[in-house]
Image 1 (cartoon, helix red, strand yellow):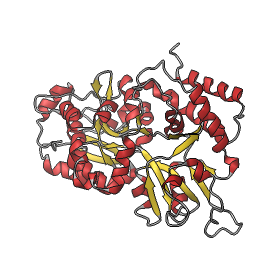
Image 2 (cartoon, helix red, strand yellow; image 1 turned 120 degrees about the vertical axis):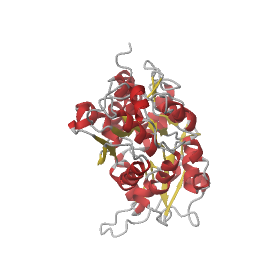
Image 3 (cartoon, rainbow, N blue to C red; image 1 turned 180 degrees about the horizontal axis):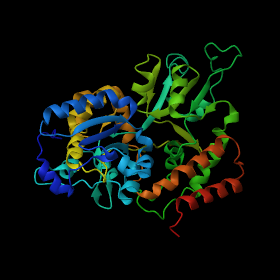
Image 4 (cartoon, helix red, strand yellow; image 1 turned 90 degrees about the vertical axis):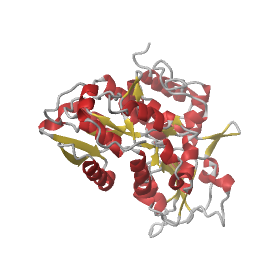
Length: 426
């Protein structure tokens, strides 16, 4: 992807069809950029470099903190007070675009934003920033999750092998897990965990069983078959193995689980690729691999992850769309993505960046790439918003034991879940 420097502002104004009077939030001649707290040091460097390379840009550029996970809801409350350039998750695209909150990304006479996005990025990510045939996002990363484990508990030289590490059942069946360091009550470490109350992770077992969410390509609002025979089999497995009361399985926020693995309170957990920079930071006792399997009907069913992407979007209420778009293109360019890969552990969406030695030869990124190739992209359609709360309720009821484990109760819970996901499509 080319770095966007000295792009003619007048051409971009024509492309987006807007004036240049004031930025979002009521501040004149100012462009505001939102990014996550951990990204701030690198983001600020990139903004300074953009200003140095684009001396024709007269607006003041301000970097502020905003968690990308809830950027959509913040923007929706007051679009005019929101930033001009916004980092968000790709599943926000459909909701925000349908609500008119995002500027469509198109080519102009001096800028080829849309063409470059389509040409230079992984096809799955291009799909994730597209809604109703139009582009709405500048891709920055490809995200998924993998399994981390501590060799202080699961030591390949002593008590485990590949067959053990690739099996949830074997981990949960492990005997004599060590005492938690510093525990005065004789508390032992738990074996395995993931956030079953989060729809980003609950899907793993259903996808392993061949179930789909919004159809094969995630675009059919009338389709969700998690209440079929295979979905029921996973629910039976989940209620047998993922209860809090069993003492071997732990559900919690993904970062808390990662911290528990780091501190030898938990043998293995499933969490995102970003944990290598945010939590583990090269800890010598931490290793990682693609997702393990569960055993259903005597067969190994490999858990299948969701994948998503972080993207920069332009606020449709911005009156500085030209500069905002140039900036978004710059901070998601090939060179910028390589720096995010090095500094933050983000796997790049840019195809050239993916083929760089720094990415393709990195052992950690090889695992991320392998898991991405086995993942299901989070749907972009606005109806995905109905899924998250329903999944939270279903997963939480499994973990806390409020959901009975008889077939009739499980089927009823799945039917209710599917009805909620498909609400309004009857």
